[in-house]
Structure formats: structure tokens, C-alpha cells
Length: 370
Image (tube, rainbow, N blue to C red; front, side, top):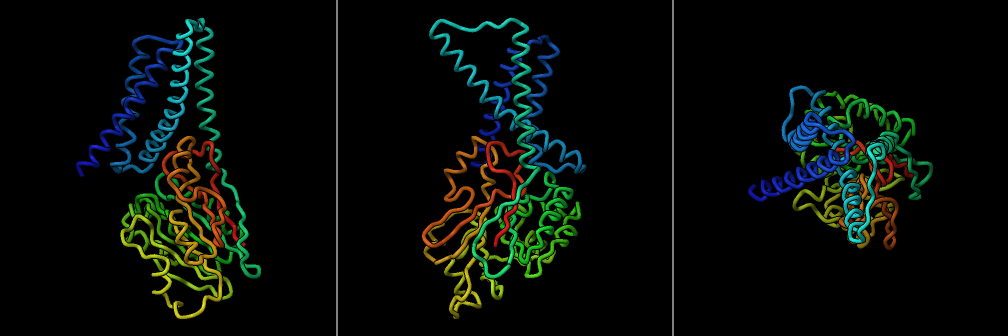
């Protein structure tokens, strides 16, 4: 607990310093000055520094107000990220110019044009990023399923305050329009609070999903955060078969092996899951499709002879340059991979975590598998 408190305090200090640096330089470069504007900058910086952690720590009794402040706080966080990059770039450029005893002095009109141009650039970046999240795309992957069988895989919906019932209704409509035989939910269906999902009656929307051969889901790390057993029991109550280190056989199509999430200590190996299933004593007569939320440990899937593995979790990085770090810490990042005789697909997911933006990364997507 002490380590968590220290880490949280450290993050808050870093975030606060970032706010101070950007707003201080923004005020300095602004064509407008005066005590009133200075106090606006100070109050806004303090409010934004505190609102993000507070909105994640407490639940306001007014869901609409809570959702508004969450969106505003996350939007500011992203704006701050890119503004900080620009400010650092400008300051470093200024340092280099001073080394050569040169510089650029802008008149007031030039400063105003530059200030508003930077602001317009940042706002344009946010609008484009929000568009890439909201206008999700359809990806088709050919795994060589038998006959005319069609699966739709979705991941990382993160249902809750930010990905609300109106958004879920769009997802359900797009999925049903595909007329899939099977629907696969590859973790993080719920964001962090089952109560927020229940309050919006999202269960009735999930029950509208149509797949004659079944809907199958595995847990993700966010189900773990949302009290996993309770969350997965609720998901199962919506007509979705939850696979937690278990196997089902779809006759003539595939074995589907759903894994417990990496967040859970002591999850079974692939071999242990298979040997504990009802199919362990029989020869594998159909392809094996593994659902594993986090794309880690691809070597195990290859060694076990997995035919296909579907994962999510990475969101395709969600924001550049954060995506560079996400690429480094995950065995598989986004898209199709082949290792040995095993094929993998890591989806960017339909929803988002936190900021409603996808900047410099793949768009939101659902995956059609044939």
C-alpha cells in the first residue's frame, strides 16, 4: 500500500509539473496578458491536475456529470501530452539558436498568429483522433474456417461511463449486420464498474447479439478490476458463454479454448487446460482457436500446436508516441503474425481506455473471420 501511495504521488507530481510547464509557457507566449488571464491559467491548471485522479477514485452520484468530467479530464490529458511535446521542441530549438547567438523575435501580430495556429493544430489533432475512434472499421482475416462459417471477434469494448449504451447500440447493430455464425469477445467487455453497466441497462443490448452457433467470451484485465467473478457471472447472464481456462467444440468448425487473463495468479497452461477438458482423450479433429486477451507468451501457443490465436488488450497503442512503448512491452502488438505453424491476430478493439481518441495508431475495429 505504501508503494502504491508513493507511486501515485509521484505520478501526480509529474502530471502537475507538466501542467505548470505547458500553461506557464503558454501564458508567456500568449498575445494576451493581465492578472485575470493569469488566474484563469492557474485555476484551470490546478483543476485539471486534480480532476483526473479524483474522477478515477470517486463515483459521483450524477452519472452524466461524472462522465462529462471524465471526458474533459482525459481530453485535457491528451492535449497536454502533445502540447508538452511542442513546448519542449520550441524550447530546445530556442536553446540551439541561442548557442549560435541568433534568435527569432516576433511582433505582437506574429505571436498571435503563431499562438492560435498551435492551438488550432492541437484541436485539429484531437478532432481527428476522436474521428478515428468513433468511426470504427471492419477487418477481415482468413483463418481457413470450414465451409461458409463466419465469425466476428470483438475486444476491449470497455463498457461503462465513457463507452455508454448509445455506443454499445452502434456496436451491436454493426455486428448483427454481418450475420455471424459465431461471436467471440476477447476480453475487457466491462471497463471498471459493473454498476455503471447495469445502470444503463446494457445487458438488454448485449442480449440482442445474434449468432446461431453461440457467443463466447474470455475475461480481460478490466474484468479483474471490476470484481471478476461478479462481472463474469453477469456476462454469462446475457446469454454469453464465458470460457475461463476451458474448451468448447463447435461441430465441424473448431475447438475454442478460452484462457483466464494474465492478471489472475495461477492461471493454467494451455496443456493443462486441454488435458482438463472433455476432449483430452480424443484426437484433435478440428482446428484449435485460442482466445487470450493479452498477447503474451506466443511461444507457448506455438509449442502446443495452436492453429489460431486471437488477442486484444493493446488497443494498437491508442496514442502515439505511447504506442512505441506498448509495442515494446507486448510480444505481439497489432495485426496478423505467423510464428511456426501458428497464426495470430491482435485486434485494436472497438472501445477505448480513458481518452476517446486514437492518434497515430490503427482505428477502432471489429474482426470478421472466415
